[in-house]
Image (cartoon, rainbow over all chains, first blue to last red; front, side, top):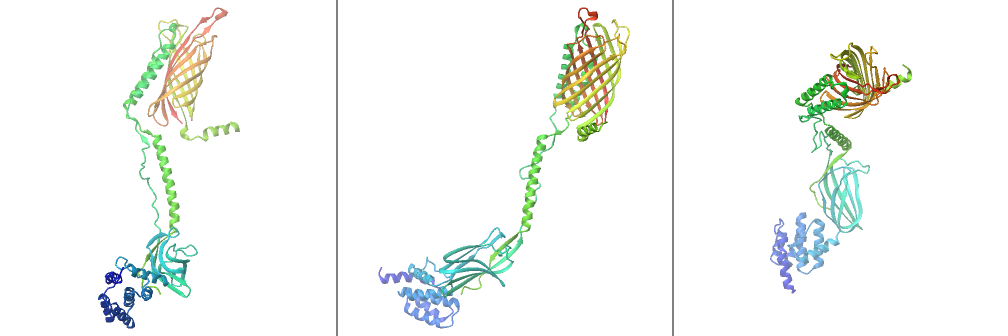
Length: 342
Length: 214
């Protein structure tokens, strides 16, 4: 690609990445010069602006403008130096890859690899029972370094982890003291220290840790989906009592007739008739009378098993609740950062 | 009571829950029809008595004593009545809800040896029972009357009994019982050493009574 075409492409890509607003007049003129494709003038004005009194974001903007202008002017080393200053001023600074040309983006990443910073320190909100969970921590170390992650609250400082790392790092902090007890509630600061030779960098994230008792489980009065069955059942009315009374009476009569010795005369009937009539009358009464409720053994057994199961479940719940009463739920919420790293 | 017997009694009855054991005793009224040798020697009787029972888990013991006044029936050869003591006893084991095995005895003793035979035998049989409803149960039984002995001698190789019983429970302490039994004893004898002769005996006995529970 010819040089003029490359400059045209870079120029098209840049303006959207650098906002034109600035309170410093020199910086504003530098941004206008850049917008007018007068890169040499933009570089001069930006350097002049850096010599003036600028606040942090304006300094970052001035160095970023320098980086972009040097990149377009093929002064790559100077562009990388300018981007390094941008990164040191704002470690979390990112270029929008959709709006910035790949050449500038690659120079920016080149600058990232040459400085030691801890970027994009993120702590997720989390709620968990102490000892049964942890809060996720993520950050990126731009170059190989020894990294120590600490949690600090007042005079107490807990080492979360220590490692040699580069690139993206993920950790989980159980928020427990070395004794195993949960950390005290209140404001905490998560500090990530990176050290490589003489270079050091620290990033921090304020947190608020809350403690609350763990909810206990209510005891069960019934098992969902299972209902107790009636232990007494009234059987349906039937003719069975009368039928059986008739069967027993006729059976006895038949036996009597069969046993009777014909030589001793006709079968005696007075006693047989008396008891048979009483039996049949009782059978008739029992047939007509509403049957009395009787024990439903299967239902009783079912209910007993249900009660045993319920008692077992409640015993488990009581055991679980006893454990939960000794537990603490931790709620960890990241707070807005007051400033960047150093 | 010896010490051993007391220990056994304590183990048998003391350890059982009250619901598993109950007993009762009460008056009964008996009706009887007695025949011997031929149709012309026939008596009918009525008389008071007493019955008792005791139930312990699956075991039960029942007994009835009746004092019957037997009267000859019109048109027969007998001219004089007699008094008889009828004793019946059963020891039962309820094997199933509807089946009970029983052993026992029956003894009938007339006050006059010339009026009727004195009879004694051992019962061996079974009983089936069915609950008609709440507080009412009936039973049908059949027994073999083994080893029958008669005051006039002889034996009864065929001696059977059938019976029908009805038990009514009015309350925990008051019960009523009706019972019917028919005995046939094919007595054979050889008076004076002569040829064997048949002298059958039959008795139909019914009684109704109340027991007051303990």
